Every structure is written in C-alpha cells, then in structure tokens.
Length: 91
Image (cartoon, rainbow, N blue to C red):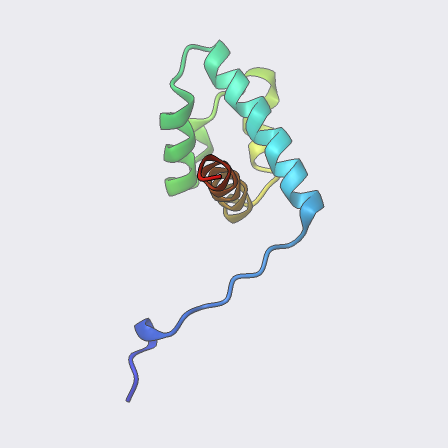
C-alpha cells in the first residue's frame, strides 16, 4: 500500500489576470505597511500564515484590498516572482 504523502499533487494556477491583480494588491499593501512604519515582510508573512487580516494596516484601504485575493494566489505571485528573479540571476 502506497502512502499518500509519496504522491505529487498537481497545482494549477487560475490565470495571468489574477497574477496581475495579486501583484497590484501586494504592492499597494507593501507601501501602506511601509508608510505606517511596519515591517512589510513580517506583517505579510503573519497574514499569509494565519489568515488574520489584523496583520495588515487599514491605511490606504490595504486590509480590505488584501482580502480580495485568496492567500494561495498571493503566495503564487510571491513564489513565481522570486523564481523568475532567481532564474534571471543564473543567466
């Protein structure tokens, strides 16, 4: 009997328009957190791990904006952008 942890799960992305929206929202939220004196990295990680919108400031409507995009879509955008940058550096 094969353990289910040994199988690879296929994850499909929703599409480019979602990525663009996620990117815009992440940029706006990042700027709002920075303007309010928060560490954007810490706050975004807290939100992504917990789902608690209290990690995000309401400045510039950032808290409402970030809740418009699913956390998995935000993670997809972050990881995708990181991998694109890492790939470019190896060239």
